[in-house]
Structure formats: structure tokens, C-alpha cells
Length: 141
Image: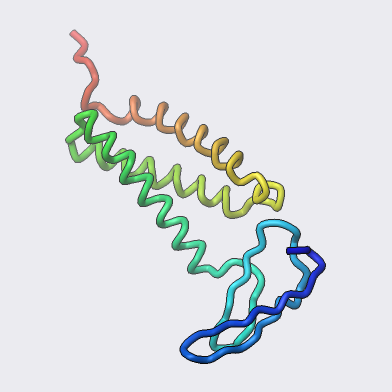
């Protein structure tokens, strides 16, 4: 799609058809528009529910994957799991906040922003877990 073009789409839903036009010029890359079926128009920008849903999916999948690894490393105490959960919610919350407030340059290179952010998340976990989790520490004699 060209950034300066005018685009009309034919939408068919519930046996009805209507046309919608994107009236504003596109940004050139990574455009998101929301179709409001009841008003029969496109609204530029992200729908809040979409952002919340995507962040929730990322956080839940991260907790599931890291939780499985945490379990395989034989962490079983409630205190360890509480620290694991608190650390992950804080770091993933900060990461997703940083990714969602990004500039247009960050949105163009989203994967690089994600990798850099994950490096900071990993560093936070490497620092926090040995300090706060005492389950597998060696006994000092």
C-alpha cells in the first residue's frame, strides 16, 4: 500500500455489505486501523483491547515457559515462586511498557527493541534470583 493512496474496502458481515475508506494518509509502515462495524468506518490507531490482549498473551506465555524451567530446576518453595512471579511481573511489565511507548523508529525495528529489552530482563533476573531466592544456596559451615 502506498502512504499517499486512498483505499476503499468492501466489508461483508452478517449478510450485509458496505464500503469503508481509509481517509487519512498512512504512515508508510506498520499501520494499524480498527474497523468499527456499527459506525461503518475505519479508525486509525490501535484499539486498547488489542494492546491489552497482546501484552497479556506475551506475559502469560513468558510465565508459562519460565515457570516450566523454574520447576525443572527443582524450585518448590512458595517463597521462591512468589519471588519468581513478582520479578517476572515487574520486568515483563516494564518491558511491555517500554515496547508500547516506543517511537516510530522503535516500531520499525520492533524485534531489535525486544531483544535489547530482554537482555535487561535477563540481567534483572540474574541479579534478583540469587539475592532473594534461598532454596538452593549452599550451607555455610
